[in-house]
Image (cartoon, rainbow, N blue to C red; front, side, top):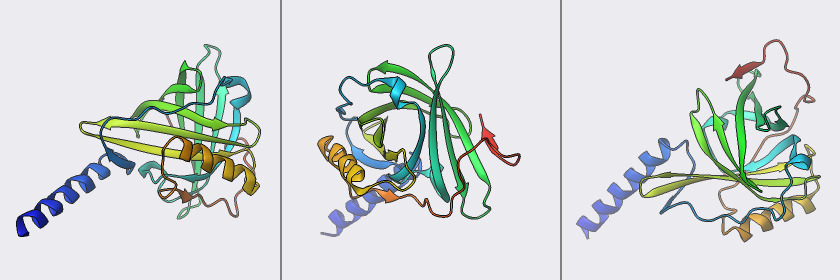
Amino acid sequence: MVKRFCHLIVSFALLSTCSLFTESQVISLGKCPHFPVTPNFKAGPFLGLWYEQEKYPNLFEIGGKCNTVEYSKKIDGTLSIMNRHESKITGVETGVRGYGKQMFPGSMHVRFPQPWKNDAPYYIIGTDYFHYAVVVTCSEFGLLNGKIVWILTRDRYPRQVYMNRAYLDIEHANLSLAFLKKTDQKHCDVVKAPPSNFIVKH
């Protein structure tokens, strides 16, 4: 009994350590699963501004509020992805710019440079383009995988019917709703051109 208890403690410690080193993603055993992407996905209508409503916990969004992501198309056909959030402590708005290249409809390979060094596939597992979208990423770390899920909406305060559709898409992908954390979108400024104190991490 003591030996088994010690084994459980060691296993828990290892998983906790792995969690810290995988950007606080939701950790599972095994390889990344197959995710069902949006049928006949079209990149054009997906472009533009989205407000983050809920997500799995992740290190690079800790302490942030008013989170948004904006997708735009570059001349070379790749996507520019600007993630923004406001610090709850300092009130300073920070942006992290990434770049995406479509692998197949509904999936893109996204790279975020310093300081995150995040390079992973992103899957759009559900969207109606006009109201909501669900984006998932998964990375493998040896025998483990780490997943992050985001629920995005076109409105800062969406109708519940669109959130319910997002929940259904997440469940359809065999992902848990239990890990979702609500993003604070209260008392946020209107999204506009970056102010002079806007920090962009390239």
